[in-house]
Image 1: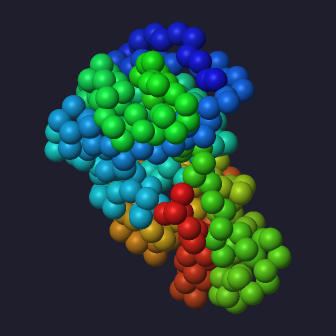
Image 2 (image 1 turned 180 degrees about the vertical axis):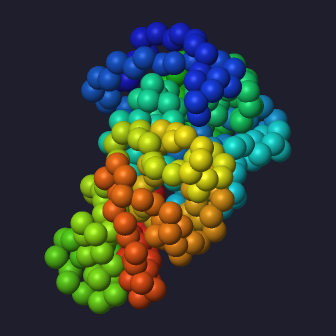
Length: 313
């Protein structure tokens, strides 16, 4: 079974400045897990349980709604205390093979580590989880104990086990059943003529979207700097220096608006217009200069990245 070897605290660094957030960093030793079906079932149940927040108002699913491809539809997410965060809620789909899990901190290299900030972070408090109270809830609530009984388990021994179970559940969320996937698997009718034209533009040297949104998950595996992109505000003010960020996946982009790391853009068309107007031939980017027909073809292709069953996991 997955074991946790040690816990240590550190001052968390993100976004180019200290936010004074104390996190617990979990070092995990991965071994064969004979109880994986239980940990996945437990992770899904915990993910949707509002009692994980200190005031029983928010769950993980509050900011990562299945029906919105595990985003929340808000410009920036709202904490259990009703405060707006600086960042837009990212999708949790297709994270299994990621190397980095934070918007801008390359030291967060596992889902287990990333969970600690929303659970236990103090500045801001996102969920404000009380480990002792929540573990007691899990081990005494009949809906949980019935689940344990189905797998021959009496109780959960630590909050670390719960953190790992959430991660195991999220790692399953990689459906790969969009029209694009069907097309790539041999169904020549899965994409329309316009979507195929948009795909060719997307992958072309001229447009070169794949320089940031490449590979099967339409993202980069590393944290990178984007020319003329300022984070988390005023994306298009080139007078402010670059800031390294994690590139989001474009899968399910049609249902994960608003866009950008601060939720400042409402439509895919607006994103394409901005890139078409502002990005210069720096750091691998091309001068795009797309006409309106090409922009619509590119948008049609991005709609083809929408999974059919992402909300059925």
